[in-house]
Image (cartoon, rainbow, N blue to C red; front, side, top):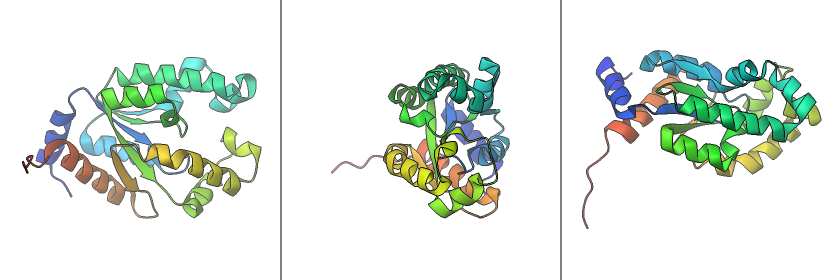
Length: 193
């Protein structure tokens, strides 16, 4: 497990940037994000909670009353504001990274980490919650499979990819920290041909 010196080096290399977790619902962005933030001694922010605070309504109500395009526009604005207030560990909603403006803002003000998960894990996890607007449109496994097909190629643009799976959260946090260290701190010297 990385030591305090490694954490300080990562925080120093981040500067004002945030670590931004992306991925499908159920991949563990909030649960992993809280632990990662504690490990890095950074604040944790859940973008969905911030959107609900800003709107004064639940995400489910925003979808029902105004539709997905309205929600996505509000999400983009809230994320742009949050990214200006880094450094932090920021968990985004599953569709946030699909917006090109949001991806650009994350690239400028953050380091993106995709928590990639297989379908059976996602189905098992999201089945425990009833507040997922996109899952109200059909069978969860079918909806998630379609979302994987459309979103995984975009999520793959993230700076770092870590496999979310059924292991203790600390294992995944350690993998993220190791990759952050490689990306930000231990950049190998360039070798000329």
